[in-house]
Length: 413
Image 1 (cartoon, rainbow, N blue to C red):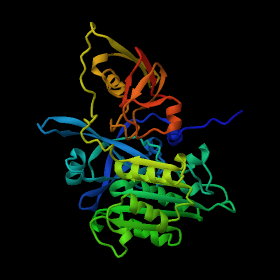
Image 2 (cartoon, rainbow, N blue to C red):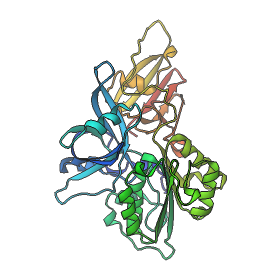
Image 3 (cartoon, one colour):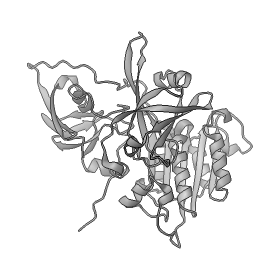
Image 4 (cartoon, one colour):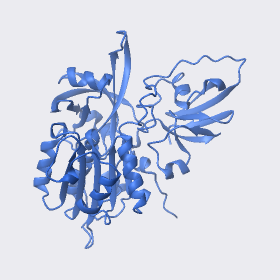
């Protein structure tokens, strides 16, 4: 019987196989990282621990109500990567840690940095995301059991193969370090032959998030971890580590600072422009797409409206409409959508099922992922799904619009 290949997202979601859902968690601690960034630690009680199993590199969506410019409370959702490796406590409880960097004009991030405190509560969605390593402690691709075991790194089983060296490189900018530090900690701890190189770009030293943690990690693994801080607005002794990372500097870094030709897996995390530059450069160097893991913290399209809730759409029976059918939690829903409205599948579904999962609604996080069962759609943007997922019929419903009179999608698969 042939093995069934799972997509990265399917593998990443395997622990518990639960559909992402919100749970109210208490804030245990808010720790200042930089002038514009904080680390938030949530307590996860034993009764909810299974809902918050995660793999290093995944994210959670946070939900709360904040007043808009008119003072009217409205729901706000934001996704943030988990910045710590999985851990649990003797009583069965666990924790979730995320880092929130204040963005210019960012409603949630500004509020959190200024006002969030220990004892507050927020709605936290169970972890999601496919920005996870595909490799185990011996440098080979992980099967499903080994993927699950990363929830408890201390329990990873098996001897390291004689040729079990594994090399990983991460290129991160700003808050892009958040998932990367969790991945690095786990991979370095799991395999004594793992090597990890990190290129970390910031404006200045005062902007470096997790500076002390990175230094501690370097002290713990001095021979296996190399960290290259690149500062765009501060002069460093090495010219290569000063200035903005552009195409020329990236080629120099890959040619001198790290052993770019012997890397098992790459992790790219940061703004769209940097991630795309790295992907293009690695492709030119012959790196296979399946060896590159990437995650964006924005789509690079700030003019796009936020997807905090479905926009209102008036359906006139006299006008032509699409029929959209969707399955969620085993229940089927139907909604009609005016053709002229060019409404997304997500927006249409939210009008009849407010609990449809979504977070960014910008094609970045992948929370709204579903599989097209019948009919056809077109997708505007895609920064979350990989080619093998697209080949299987998965789409981002926040970016997908019907192109056939009837479309059915399944959120449960």
